[in-house]
Length: 170
Image 1 (cartoon, rainbow, N blue to C red):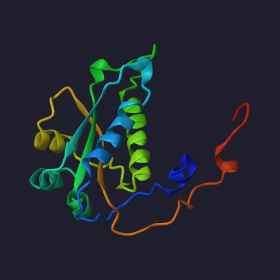
Image 2 (cartoon, one colour; image 1 turned 45 degrees about the vertical axis):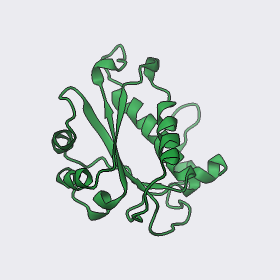
Image 3 (cartoon, rainbow, N blue to C red; image 1 turned 180 degrees about the horizontal axis):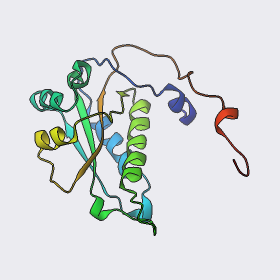
Image 4 (cartoon, helix red, strand yellow; image 1 turned 180 degrees about the vertical axis):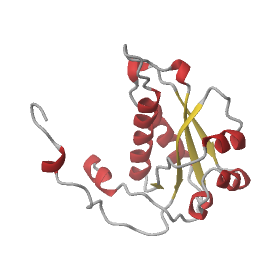
């Protein structure tokens, strides 16, 4: 698919077919995340691929939605803040770095005909408990991954450029 078509077709999917995700597609999607840029090339990210149905069900403790736990794959995007770059004023960039990698992942999934839905409203402590994530690692986002159960059209509900773009100042 052409890049701008991928961007237009990427949608948040909340209904998945039970069909498994092919290993080669999963690896291409993870490779896209791996190739994302990061501040000072620190690459502070880690991705946990959850395919085990029992583990996915246990993630309900962190985000209690049927459609989420029934997707054939859940990807949990984490950061190691100790490995991330910090700006001079102390601002940490691990969330930004992982967000960029996740967006690469989400667009790659759309290119493969797979659906995702960025999840940020989760109980981090519960995710860490279910997946055995070390204390110093932070969970930034999760997404189900699978074949959409319904077809959606391109994104249309975005603000026009005139409302969000400023030239040479605010």
